[in-house]
Length: 320
Image (cartoon, rainbow, N blue to C red; front, side, top):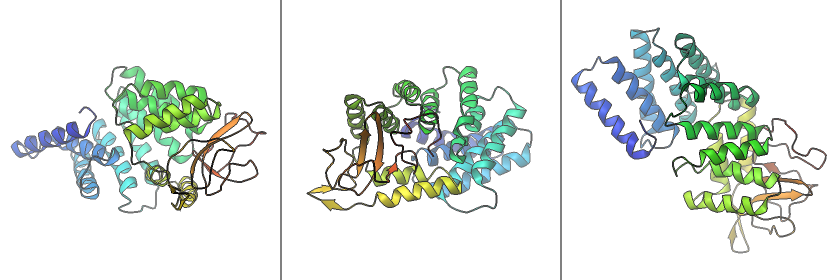
């Protein structure tokens, strides 16, 4: 399946037709489960919870039929991500960890399964272990260098670097990701924050314009809400929830506090809540209700709830 909403619908229809011809066709069951899960993850599904339940049922049936099927274990990993996003149920075992375990099982059965390596690596970010994520994604790109999801893998490497405050590397990989489908709007948030940290105002402003061109309805609160859907790690979600509280919209001076804007002190005015702020050589993105960006204030930065200061100039630490 290529990655767009239209291709998603076409793939679902194709698998449905195959299953009408042969309801026991395991490849079609697995393929449909994977496609329905992708629809939930990428926001293409009209019925996320219903599709997630069906994907889970199909994946479980495939594993019963062939417990040693690597693709079935991979699809079960995708189902766990759908479960996290839909918040349909809670589990004693964190579902993010269970998804990584399924991806690792798939790798054990088939070392050449590129997507399983990518999932096993990137999903560690949502467990606050971003530094462990690179090897899986690099292996995936080595195994499948021309994969249609290569731009997504490039973004994921970019995002790992962002969480580790490695701004130059983040920009490098997000620029590669930006060569992919135009709906990959979230790439530009990392480009904005990374350029701001590097004091590249023009580049940060241009990236913000690119983001809003692709996602004109995006707001600070919506961005934080989207970030909260991908993890069930208690610490990760608690930090995101803290930022979401700061992003509650009010209006002042005719502008929505939830509006995405770019400014630097002292030009940040009350009513602007999505800030890119810089103090000397330090720049980073905050969601705040304060009328000014000041170093003394404790704000919520884009990638966590630990503000950086002049004494902590973006060294390689995991912010969230």
